[in-house]
Image 1 (cartoon, rainbow, N blue to C red):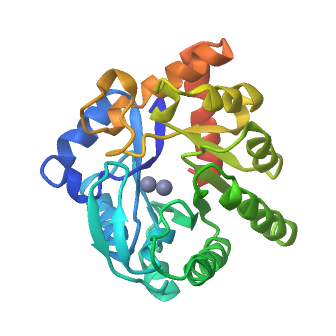
Image 2 (image 1 turned 180 degrees about the horizontal axis):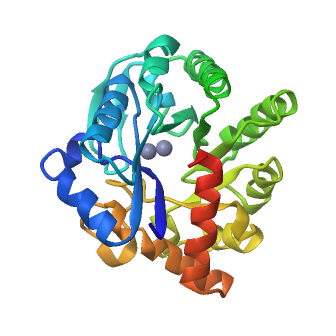
Length: 283
Ligand SMILES: [Zn+2]
Ligand SMILES: [Zn+2]
């Protein structure tokens, strides 16, 4: 496979009807697929899909920070769902991760963007931190990649700054930790700090949107050696497919944008980012 979509959700309801065709289109476009769980049910579904697709499909299992407490969850498409509170049960996830094609733990981390208007924010942040710490522990124990979701509160870098502190501390004690920050939307300065710790920065369709000067600065600052590609489908559809549900076969548009900004060929972007993803996930 030429590309690896390092973060996608073909395992969720949005693809219930046609997951098979979506995976086929991805493979026809040269894209391998890494499906992500966000709580126990979607993690299970990601693992179940491995049976159906013997090749070029992988899974990452874990608990998203926004599922650690009960609230009205508004996703990237502004769809509201009531989520229930889940406490991370390491033994359940460990069992799911016993399949060798489960290559990471996540998406886990901190989401300070979607904190509910009502409710004790400090308490919610503590729940998120606790679930994250447990998932770091599991990733280290199982030697799987740590796949981080990190979203700061509006107009700040609070969650990224806190994340940098956490990862710096964990890396000091566990130099072998492999990690990525998916859907990175922070500053170029902090992206570089994560890269200096050996992390990979996951970039997606946001790069193709009109207001992408911040992303451009991130791409220009980072070396290609620190970048991996993702779609985060069904969300964040790239510009040329606007209005459609996003899917892994749309990934090359992200690579194209990086090639343009870095002034290299799309083949170079494909080759290096695939190499990076393989090193991150040990595949
Ligand atoms: Zn995420
Ligand atoms: Zn995601």
